Length: 127
Image 1 (tube, rainbow, N blue to C red):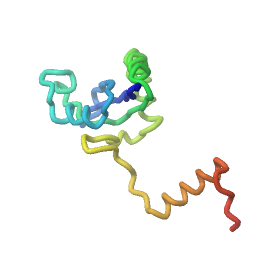
Image 2: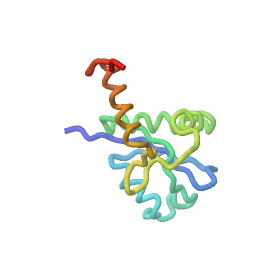
Image 3: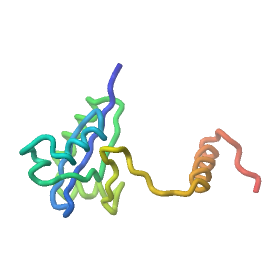
């Protein structure tokens, strides 16, 4: 069975340094960074504790390829990638899980119904 993977970007409180990494368990790995478990590592030295971007892949091999691609980019291109998904550079993942926006239950249901209607899995409402 193939194991999936993640590419992720970490930053510090000042957003002055970026780190691109790859892992098969994103929450565990973020916890390792936040708790400085690998002493004298790049993320430890620069206090990179905030996961502000990630991509999920079905294969760890694909995740590694993407990590290598992003690492070659200049700072501006990396910032553009982050901004495309997370313009406020909010923390997206912690060692406790993936952060979600606080959205009312009614809004969540409306979004699900719209998505199912768009896929043709349920008929449009007759309002």
